[in-house]
Amino acid sequence: MPPKPGAGKGFMKSPADIAENRSGKRHTRSHVVTASARREREDQILMGDAQRAQPEEMADAVEMDGDDSMPPQSSSSVRVPTKTIPRGPGGRFASTAGSSSGSSKRSRSDVEDDWIVKSPVPGGPSDGLMIPSFLGHIATAIWSGQDRGLLRCQTRSLYCGKLCVWYGGASQQIQKRIESTGLSYLPNIMYGHIDAPLIAAFVERWQPDTSSFHMPFGEMSIMLHDVWQILRIPIDGAMVTADASVEELQSCVMELFGMTREELQKGHYFNGGIRAASVLDYCQGDRIADAQATAWTFLMLGCTLFVDKSGDRIRPSCLLEVQDSVSGAIGLSWGSSALTYLYRHLGIASRGDCRQIMGCLTLLQAWIYEYFPCFRPQREGVTLDSAMPRACMWPSIPLEKSGDRLKSYRVRLDRLTADEVMWMSYGPDVITHTPRTIYAGWIRYRDVIEPYMPGRCMRQLGYVQNIPRPILRPLKSVHPWSSLKYRVEVPVDMAEDLWTSFPKACMLILSRFTLARTPSECEEQYMPWYCLHSHPQLLPDMPAPGPVIHTRSNNEVWVSHWVNWGEGALDAMNLLDEDVAAEWRHSYDQILDAWNSAK
Image (cartoon, rainbow, N blue to C red):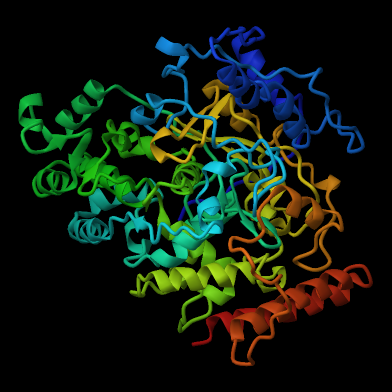
């Protein structure tokens, strides 16, 4: 098992200055004159806010001189590095090498602005301050009575099974090489069956502008400590940033297979991907240990954390870190990479015309089970060993993929209350175990960069939810109805600089928040603000959520309530008598351990 991420404290100057210092000069965005007033307005909405909104957001994540009472920095005191976006014929935005884009097809798409919120939206926000791309969201169609149905959930469960067989039959020399990456168990914990209606229902509530699910009671998100708890893959470490041209990627595969380019392109490599069956056929048996370990790790990454829509093919970019040796996979933040990739594809799947969802769907489905007892499947045990990935807690069983189940999930989510959520599913000390979860900035996987804003989901960290800071705005974003035109651009140097500055900077200042007395607690003004700027309900004419009375047989809910109450009671006892509190906590932990190990 990979070691748990280490803790660290300390603060330094603002993240914008960090990015500036790396380049040695301040960057300014040049003025671009367009021939269209519409494009000018689009620039003001999409690009002009970057220098104003981003420092205000990041100010809440950085401590200056250790003074918790210092007010947030003004936009005049901090500059955000930007760059000129070149335009092609007709004033359209051109693709840039330093941008973060979903695909080349999206980069070449025309830019439309009919997805930008400029006035109150029926069933949606009153303005575009929080979710400016809401008019391109599938929720707008559902509110008006249209239904796109289920999403196709991309998985590689067949090849995960073959990877397990390959690993089991490999020599100890090969197994040790693979185990050194800390990722050898991933094919074993990927779910063979994905609940497509449940996944689709949550995708309909994902907002890429905030990197969060918008529920009737506020925002929730998959955070870095969730990835650690569910998958047990490294969170700390360097970002996965390597990239290469098509020719370079082909050369890597040629070296792995021992083929010429002509041989490779004859039935093995096409449409930018290498056939997974070819990796299995050519890299087992009498190949040397290094080659087999490299091929296994390459195929494993493409079948678990970075699943795409290529069917039986794997993108060769997963080979870049391990082409010389599997040791190249050590020391990298695979957790943040997998989360970035999932964030991006949740955003694409939330667009109105999208019909499929990619990424690590085991992570998404297990996250739903962790926080929402009402959607959990029946299971024999309660928990596993604390060192095991929590994805192993939940059974993977085939479930009906029907539109009726999706509709029932929509209604249930619209009626869901904050009291039904297991806000602290992993216990009260998630920050201690995973300090990186309170990083605030951008996360990256190769050319994909996404905002990570834990301050929007403080109840998942045990704190009272307040009105969060403005969203982190990319240099440019296009989130239209068409998923093929989906595009996000962020200066790659800034994303990497902010990540490496943690924990000296880019950290939520927890002293500015209040510990929650009850798990679902939020400030009085939060919900009125949230209802004004979001879409708490997906369906029109739905009554407001009321109190839910659970049956006595719903053990998950009742035990969760008792655990939450017991943790709060023990925390309160700490203020009275330290010795008595320690004794009660020891007894409480013994009971929980006995309960968790019971069959």
